[in-house]
Image (cartoon, rainbow, N blue to C red; front, side, top):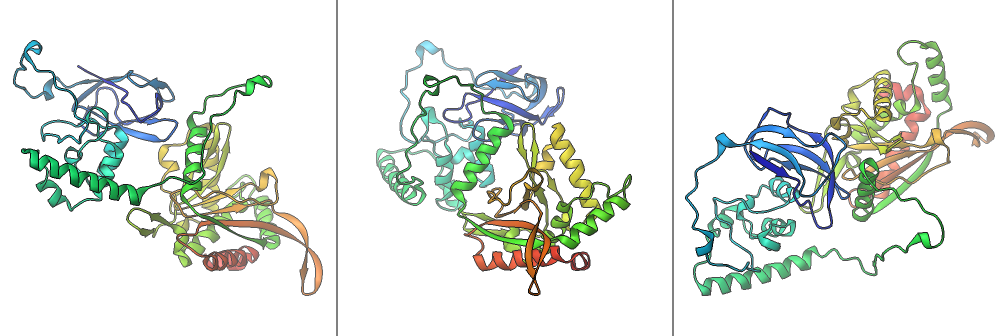
Length: 440
């Protein structure tokens, strides 16, 4: 039996919250297959199985917090073990000090690396066994993987994999390695000038305090928002849509459909329908940017997420293929996902795969907002509170119901003129129910 302990998930991380088990007790599992999803204070990671065999027991329910080094699973690998030659007695084995230089990993061994590092290697299509390790104890670090990925083609890397045999080769390899590290550092430096994060003072010296550990959804929100604000150069474009006619139509339909389909018809359903039409005409806002490959990925599918306020924090359920749904179907899907979010019964699949997000603070109050882009998306629409206001129509002051809209977007992917055209078209469709129903 092999007792699998929660591995080191990164510097400064000492525990993780179990989010999902991929394998049930008694099931077979392959080496490196997904075993369990664990959320730390930095990110949610999928931990692969270190062995091939049968999962005998799982130590930790969903939501349990486990410490680094604690046993989280027991795997029966008895039938999977490969005979190895006997080892020499420890008393006769020479003591070898660990080398600080990058270590060559033999093809038959499994280099030490954190699960996140292994996942990074898989995403980059790299055999982690070939990556020279520079971390403590011969550990492969994410920087090692990125440095290796930025090097020669895989064929050249494979040819260079054999261990160094002579001092001359070792010296030349060290020189080349140092040069590569210097070049990588020059291109990958991420230091922010004048940014100096100081430790917080002891607030209890001025009065009573209450401390709550940042966990689960709130920690995830914190991670996502910092990532968004640090990586994405945000720009916001604002406008107002006259939804007087649309609101009259929506309210009449809700009353007419009371007790049946459409009784929970919301303005958000109409906005999602208009958004999907707008995204087809403006694909830049339904994309993602890969900064490492310097590529824009345009998605030809339209999965719209909407921010849902829950007692545990903000989540973003995703409506898949929203462009293929009717307004009534969208309304039903919004209601069911929102109910599941509040009850805490959303599936992980309901939170993934979004291409564009809408956040609606109107029901809670406030006139407008500037939302943060839901990374790795490139745009988000913020809806304020629709309220009656005096406006000028044909030279006359009239009262109309106006909906504040803010499009926050990634300026690396789109420009202000693109945003203006996108929002103007959105305003036009929301201001005319006939155009919305005919053109979507």
